[in-house]
Image (cartoon, helix red, strand yellow):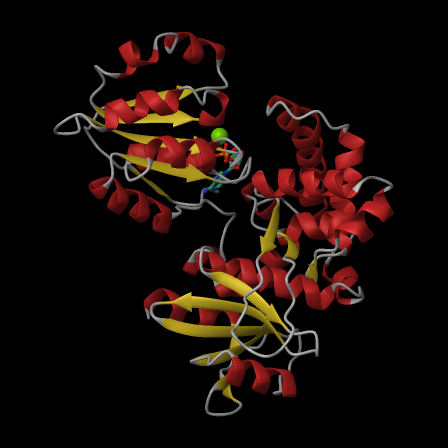
Length: 385
Ligand SMILES: Nc1ncnc2c1ncn2[C@@H]1O[C@H](COP(=O)(O)OP(=O)(O)O)[C@@H](O)[C@H]1O
Ligand SMILES: [Mg+2]
């Protein structure tokens, strides 16, 4: 079964009108190559040239990249571009040619090189379309529990059953730690990073505390910080930054940490199925992380924060979207209600609206500015205004 990923194809099509280069960053195995292929197939007669920088023969074709790339017309796909950062200055020259004889789709699995190198060399010439796992809009709301449980990596979501999904995740961890990480030139024993990653899953949805994690891991704080940055730079972990309002209140200053894919989080926690999740203390945090990623897949994550004061008021997610300040609190409950903390966040942050995102199917107004909203409902209204 192949999911069409139409929203991605449309975004790519739109961006390539305005930019000579579109980048598709995203984790390994999330479906970047497939999206590029589907896009190329949708082009009809326009010529398409594809280079996979993990293939030795394709690399050989790029020994002299400027010579190889400049005669090409149409669409040029450069897959796993983090393998050849020296291409960025070449792309800059090619992007600046008059009449843009070719457009480039560049794919990468590590922001360490991709986003940094690309943003520096290609400023103003490229646009990013972040690729995430399958979204609830793509699977349909009726598959919410399957998507939440298994996560959005295509091979996990589409696996024959939960066990097969879990087996795929285990193999994915192994390849990621033993091959992908060393290929980025990072030398950390696979077992150390795996242990750190597992520990992070137990802190999923909590404020980052370097000293506590370093102690638990038996390492230094800078080492813990570095592991965190590696897992963030490969799209496995999200660091949600704190928001500060100009208030006479002490506010939390460290980021909040999430395992981005819910299925990966469940695998790291050793949760076999929905029943195990329902009985686990991380149930609420898992719902929070899942719903948060779904929302950020629609709004983008460049204007997203959490907010918390030392006196206990907090907001799980603050997003500046289409000129509005929107607040989100995630509650895994059938009967959401308002709390003091929500009222404080609403007033202190001047929110236009606060959604209590819950797993129900009906929108329930709680006050004039607070609504208990089903996740799919929130996603629809964010996407369509
Ligand atoms: N839209 C999709 N529908 C079904 N399976 C998919 C889809 N996208 C990716 N896959 C499967 O997931 C795996 C990883 O996809 P791939 O495109 O190679 O990811 P990436 O390039 O991000 O590493 C492949 O086995 C692929 O067949
Ligand atoms: Mg690929």
